[in-house]
Length: 383
Image (tube, rainbow, N blue to C red; front, top):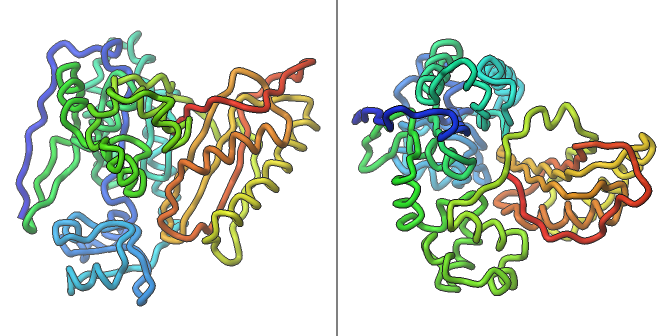
């Protein structure tokens, strides 16, 4: 059974008020499987490993209404939903559909930032000259994704990345007692909504806060976003690291200076490796990262350039992936400096599964100058 919601929005919304859009496709892997096999429509479908050690990578809304979710062990998922249909992943096919998704985004604005195959930010500022309001743009984007690809999506619009992403989550369906409650599809985050969320939402709602970090913050008595406003950043840094502490303190007051950055991959130098045997040890992962930092440092030095952004990309056995990046005010071409940034970025990634792929990338290049390398940084991690 489904319950439907109606979209509401502020009057006279402009891209100056709401310049950032975040879009997240619904249950992406599972939705593609249903798209290619319509006989699965309306059934509980999951993508992942079906064996005793298998893990769910994606679950349809029908499966989620029964309690199944990504990163859940398949044996637990079958216990909750005995008629669950678990299909193996077809990553090449998902990449094909993702390319269509990115093409639609490019039609909306040239400044969009893919976060994964099924998720991206978009900068709506370029729509100002066309006199297009953000709500119209969001609804048209969602309609094109539905009509041209055949999958649903949630779209959030806000004044920064933090609120746009929270908005897209609110735009999506929720589940209770086996019932799917459809969200509005598009959610514009007003200043009044910002204030309410910052005062009432748990810390888990924030980007980068997974179960482990949530538990660590809870031990400090920090269970809600509002609690973060009462703690000194230096004290918090001793428990969660300087990068995450800075980010959390900023988020607690609604501050998120990260811009939407286009074409990161196309303008980067990187090295990635798919491991023959997935990596479970943090020490081993760091060893691979150090070697990759040495390779990209040598590559950028040979090009007589320096880079200001370091990024890491981690892909897990369940095919989910996480990217982190940080931009520094100085150019980098030194292996140790690059590794210092990459290592702290890796510390912000919660490893819920063995790691099958790791990549380190450099971008935002400039010609090398006399003194450009900074060895230590006070990091504020970008998503």
